[in-house]
Each structure stands twice: as structure tokens, then as C-alpha cells.
Length: 220
Ligand SMILES: Nc1ncnc2c1ncn2[C@@H]1O[C@H](COP(=O)(O)OP(=O)(O)OP(=O)(O)O)[C@@H](O)[C@H]1O
Image 1 (cartoon, protein in one colour):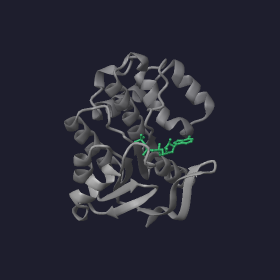
Image 2: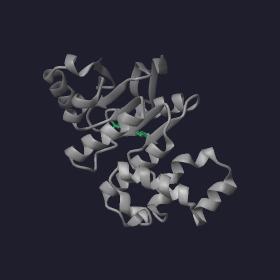
Image 3: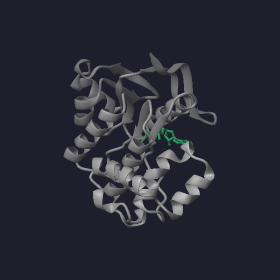
Image 4: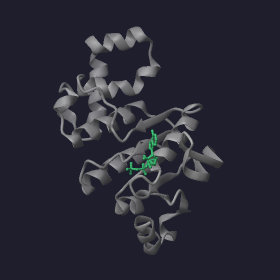
């Protein structure tokens, strides 16, 4: 069953097209990775799919810049994954006081991303890789039908990145991510989508994407 479908749409900003006449579909159960050079249009496609799917389904987002609140604690940033599940008074209350079960729940998500001991720390005091893990814990806390991630493991090493992708795939039936690490993409994607020259250049399972196609993608 299809979660997202773009049928010949041109995506861009103002009068400037970035991707022309995009044919793209995302079905439940798929783990799709977007590949391409910087500026190719990966974020543009992710953003369009996020807008379309979040209108009807619960979607967790890991944006490229993490979109954390630096002055707040790690715990409170994780809880923001559920802001829209609660009334304003509840969210205000969690800014000043967290219940025991809430603390336990947050800790469980932090455990999954290897940040167990950092719950009280302010996000502004974290390293880049730790901030990225907070954004991942926030997405895990949100849950949903789909995870959309824009370079969600770019700030950690390959071994940590692989472990984090495994966590995401264990908890989200469907994922759509942009990755710059082709090795990770080949290993974890069920479909690779190559973006370059203002278009989708290939869209196929990893076993059907050749090294020559990848070399061409990054040479484009
Ligand atoms: N808000 C915006 N307004 C105008 N142009 C934009 C905007 N966001 C991106 N662009 C342009 O659209 C093109 C595609 O950008 P996009 O961010 O989708 O690429 P990307 O493949 O995600 O790159 P990266 O790997 O560097 O994140 C680029 O030329 C970029 O300059």
C-alpha cells in the first residue's frame, strides 16, 4: 500500500525547478535511501514527501540541522517528539516537571541511541554527534508509520551509523532517508534512488544498482 506518490510533479523553489517531473512512490515496508551529490535535490524530495505523508499519517522527521532547542535539556528535546499529542497545559507542565514514568520512558529512548546518562544535560553543551542522537531519540519517541531522515547519521562514525540505522529500521516499518554513505545505503536500503541532473536517474533495489551508475551519480 502506498504511503506517498508523486506523479510527474516538478519540485523547486519559486520559479526555479530543482527536480523535474518526478515519478516516485513509497510503499509501506520499504526502506528507501536517496543518494546524490550535495545540492542534487535530496532534501527537496524528502520535504515534499514529508508534507504529503504527514497530512494523513504520523511521520517522524530527522531534519538535517536536527531542529533541537539548545537551551533545553536532552530529556525535554526528546519529549518534543510528542508535543502534538498533548494539550498546551501538559506540554508547559513538562517544561517544569517530569513525572517518574516520563523520565523512564525518555531514558529508554536515550538508551537506544547510546545517550543514557545525558538526559539532564542542556543540548547546547553536546557534541555534533550527540545532538544528532538526540534528534534520533526524539524521532523514536514520536514513532509513526514513517521515518523521514535527512542525513540522520552523518555526524557519527560508520559503525555507530549502522547501529542507529538498525534501531530506526527496527522501530519504523517504513523509512525514507538521504545518506551520503553509499556503503550504509547499499547495506540497509531495500531501494536506492539516485538523484542528479535535476531528475531521478535510477530507482532500484541495491543489487540492481551498479558501481558504474553510482560513479556516474557522483561525477554528474
Ligand atoms: N529554501 C530554498 N530556497 C531556494 N533554493 C533552495 C532552497 N533549499 C534548497 N534550495 C536549492 O535547491 C537545490 C537542491 O537543494 P537540496 O537541499 O534539496 O539538495 P540536497 O541534495 O539535499 O543537498 P545536501 O546533500 O547538500 O543537503 C540546491 O541548488 C539548493 O541551493
